[in-house]
Image 1 (cartoon, helix red, strand yellow):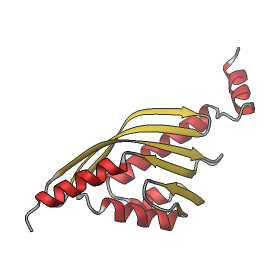
Image 2 (cartoon, rainbow, N blue to C red; image 1 turned 90 degrees about the vertical axis):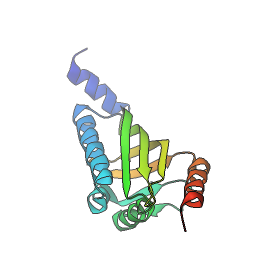
Image 3 (cartoon, rainbow, N blue to C red; image 1 turned 120 degrees about the horizontal axis):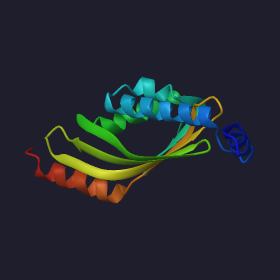
Image 4 (tube, rainbow, N blue to C red; image 1 turned 90 degrees about the horizontal axis):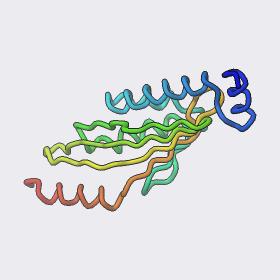
Amino acid sequence: MRPDEERTQAERRGGAGDEDETRIRRALEAYFSGINKERYGDVASLFAEHGELVAPGIDPRVGPAAIESYFAAALRLYPNHLDQPTRVIVAGRTATVEIHFTGALASGAPIEFDAVDVFDFDAAGEIVRLSSWYDSHAVRAMLKAARDQSPR
């Protein structure tokens, strides 16, 4: 089968062609660069007008402004942080990214955990839905332990 026939068949199955996959991978690179450099407005601009963010322990955030506010508030606790993608799988217009998060609180207490983000993209390459998955109970326990050890 020729590559153009494969792409056409993938598109008929609801999958993405090579151009879509390239667009998605570029969006993911921009997303993680923006998160790691605290350029939350740039990150929010990657979302569609009614794009949705779903994360543990919060109500869904809808629209770039709400998503930008969420990231600024959620990552404010970590003056030092790095979301390091360790595995990326693109299937159609969905990308699944395994992430290793390392960070430190203002006190210097380290925080480290693994997460999975699932991104859904529209035909234009904008994020229409991002669901973030991690053990929120373990992260809260790490945060509590770090705060309990901090001098008051």
